[in-house]
Image (cartoon, rainbow, N blue to C red; front, side, top):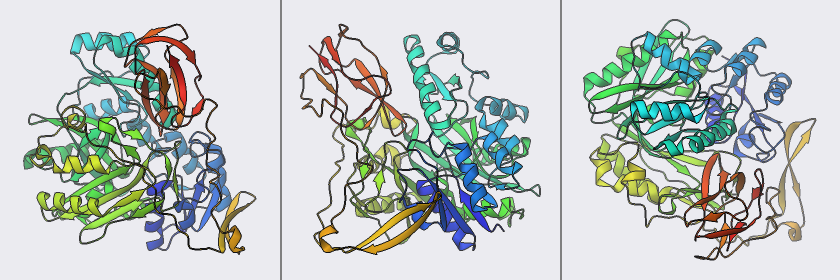
Amino acid sequence: MFSKVLIANRGEIAVRVIRACRELGVATVAVYSELDRNALHVRLADEAYALGGQTAAESYLNTDAILDAIERSGADAVHPGYGFFSENADFAQSITERGVAFIGPRPAAIEVMGDKISAREAAEKVGVSGVPGSTKILENADEIVAFGNDHGWPVAIKAAYGGGGRGMKVVNTADEAADQLASAQREATAYFGRDECYMERYLTKPRHVEVQIMADTHGNCVYLGTRDCSAQRRHQKLIEEAPAAGIPDDIVTAMGEAAVAVAEGCDYVNAGTVEFLYEDGGYYYLEMNTRLQVEHPATELITGVDLVEMQLRVAAGEALPFTQDEVQVRGHSIEIRINAEDPAGGAFLPSPGPITSLKTPDGFGTRFDTGYEAGDEISQFYDNLVGKLIVWGHDRPTAIARALRALGELEIEGVATTIPADIAILEHPDFAALEHSTKWVEDTLDLSDVSSTAAAAPADDEPRVRRDLDVEVNGKRFSVSMWVPESAASAAPSPQAKTRRSGGAASGGSNSGEVTVPMQGTIVKVNVAVGDAVEAGDAIVVLEAMKMENNVAAEKAGTVTEIRVSEGDSVGGGDVVAVIG
């Protein structure tokens, strides 16, 4: 087993890996950006090193900074988590060339499967068919139009080097092609560092079913059941279940065997997920994610297998301790992603800010994985996952009831969350009857009256005299404590607090003419110029917050009289970005 593992990630997954390492007696090394200087994963790790910067590109996607931290820490293995560099073959190669173990697949397998186009071709070679689509990088919107006209609309644009719904856009008509391609490329660049995209036919009512696989270096590869991830918004998952219910056993077996065939076809090692779309009794290969998935705890609860422990053991050269025949699926589990977003009638608006109170549920079959504690801050620069509520029941109805009970106990204050939408999903008869699909949340579920507020916790007037501080010596983080007078005990303003742009917050009232942004973020596109005529509902600017793009629309028709922002500008919630006369 390894002596020291560096986790090249942040948040909930970094915490998850740190805990698994601690149980195995393995020391851990955290890395962090300026905004994550005192994050939970940093506090829990045995050592921590500064990467510098605020955005992902400046920190967690800074290869040189991470390689330097590996060298200085003396780590003999690196766990990439998910997102960031987890599916980057060049990063994995850089690690292995230094004699450091990469806790994931070999670089060659990442190269094949991390590129979703070559992954489709690899699957076809072993007899696993996918949704009709293109196997070349998109050069322009005309290619999308031609494909849609030939194969039918809608068409899905996907990031070739991404996953998790990031960089995915649906094109419903030819007129949307250019804008949606540009948006997909921007999101792909922001989240994965590359803008290449491809396209495929977009099925209208499929279920999203994935198969968890684990392979070792001794030629063993098994699948550990299925997961259903159909409850989505913006092609990103809200609720996942294991196993995928209501699918005939022979099809489940066929999908599992197909997943193993895909993995073996690219000489795959370690944890991975093969994804399928299931519709009308048929299934289609979608993609392979060459990493641990966010929803891996759902599989852990029904199989009893600690997937992160297995990742560590396999990367250290151990053989899998079980065969396919020994894999047993018991009961049903549900994982609910708790995101810092206001459902806002279905808009799901990001809600960055400090978590003033966090009280997690407990009880039989109840687990909560998070990278935050009360007092920590959800930054606009990173994914907005606050935590994951995972429950187990002896059957699906029991798991649903337990999930609703646990959601009722979960209290998060300071940021708006998706909890009200999660409850609406779990309580809906379509969900109970397995009549939902990947577009059900957006097309069918009525969220018009569902919203969340960023309620603040009551002030704590108890005097405090101890201060825990973080200091850096040559880039390495140390935690120290000091005692101060009671008069200095009140909390200082957060160093992450942002000063609002000139122009300030506006009332944003109906038909005011002032176009305001609903949240903190970055302007990535300005769609209009002074003098342009616009209609109510037209997108004036595109705002990126927490790696998601949001159209900010005009409230009334008129003529643009003022534009107060440019592409690349940072804005705060309520800032006026344009005026319509």
